[in-house]
Image (cartoon, rainbow, N blue to C red):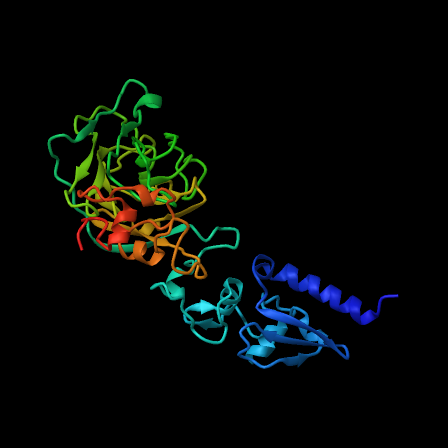
Amino acid sequence: MIHPLLKHLALASMLLAAASPALCQKKDPIMDEGFVNGVKTIQFDEGAIPPIFIHPDMLNIDPTDSGIPNAVKKLAGLPLDIDTDATMLGGISLRDRYRWGLSITDESTVGDGISDLAKMRPPGWTEERPASSVFFTLAEDGVAEATPVAEGDHVFIPNLGDYETTWVPMAIPLGDFRFPLGIRYQPGPVHVCGYGTLEFDDPEQNYYSRKLPTPKLTGDAVAVAWDYWVPKKPNPNTRIIAGFRGTQRGQRYFFARWEKMDYAMLNNRLLATFEGRLYEDGRVEFHYLEGDFSNPELFSGAQCQRGAYGLTVPQEKMVAGKKITFTPHYALDPLDGNMTHDGISDAWKVRNNINPHDENAATMIFNDKGLTLRECFEQRVNPWTGVK
């Protein structure tokens, strides 16, 4: 016959495993030292805290489902009813710290040059999202300006014969231009779509605009001003211009500008002109140059990983004359240490504006010297210039 206490301990162990995914994935930070007179002896791996005797009841997860076992909170000297989501340490909640295996009593940092806080996921993430994901921060940072037209730019004029084929996506090869949207550098081409989007996978050319992220765009995409842009009448000034600017690696950008765009469903609406820019360091800029962007069906934003992650510009920020900037946030695993699987430091990549998640980045060339990223890392030279 099984002793009731053993049944209780078995049930508590199952509850603990179910409520703490981190314990199922890596070594438990607490070691089992056996039982003495029905009381469990536990101690931390590092031996920094002497063995402490805790009653089996303390192994239960507390009623608030804090994500941290009461035994761990007790050892750390924390109240059992502490709000682990609201209690922050070094900018990271206690729940997140315990999930990632970080200290819940001091602001520890992994020794690879990037703080744990910088590695942690930004607001809005969920447990289902992988650590190697990219999120964007949004800034309203200036006055909109148009890129001057130059020789060699692509010009796109609408077909006014049929509204269904008014805009056929224009595919532009990226060549050696590196744009890190999502967990990979986009191989190109970039599809410039008439409804105000830049798409990197199969272009959906969908005029049913939605808030981003959305499956209505089939893959990685940037929506500069996604709307039903179909001219109601011929306008010789309506066109799309696209091209590349800059000569220095890392500072170059691709731009697309939609000029004098009309909205098919509304009357007396100002013609809109807007421009999107994609920089090699991952920045995305939206320049709302002129016109009316107040339609609630109009959306600006970006998404990656086939619509798994994305961000939409709030409607009130979409104002003629303003510039909006998206900055990528690379979420790194704080337990990853110094190296990724390709043998190149994550810290070094991030400091040099290199996407740390792209599996092919090590063999890519980002400079005019012909040096691969791995060679630049081994020689400790700037990957964009090839010199120290």
